[in-house]
Length: 205
Image 1: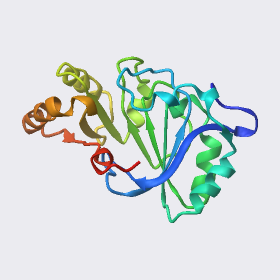
Image 2: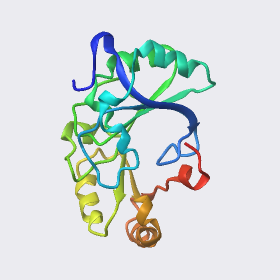
Image 3: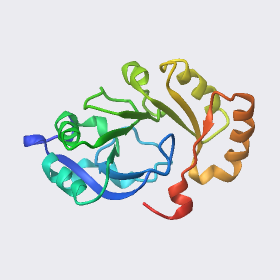
Image 4: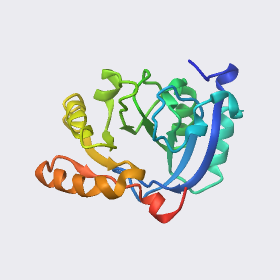
């Protein structure tokens, strides 16, 4: 797959130990592995520097696991960029062997690979998610930039499994306008919950 290299090396933009700031697992300590490479191209993306995989150093899965094991982390979040542009089986197998929980954050635009305890799917209009990833998702987190995104969110909610958690999240730059809209919408449609980017309010990674 694009971005993967010999010996299962992966482009790693950054890695850090922090708290999960969004969605179902908000507030939990987590080690983040942010992989380089993305072909979805959201106009409001806050990590556009991740898009070009060639700009980031490549590491072996064993090197990434060693970095995680230097911390008390019990949960590892693999994010991007778009992490499913890469084959994630070797990395997640090693993490699982160490007793670590594996969480994925993806747009779902590429085939699923890896071994996961939790899949957070955040679909984007710029490149549609695959149905197989939609049905595998434990959490559907739709970023709302405009009120019309709510119709789009409902369309995707019909495609996930009945047990999938449903979240609406205001796009950060539009949060003052969008958050009140989401509060009213969720009260009318209580199958949805609100996700906020708490890490940005706290100014942590």
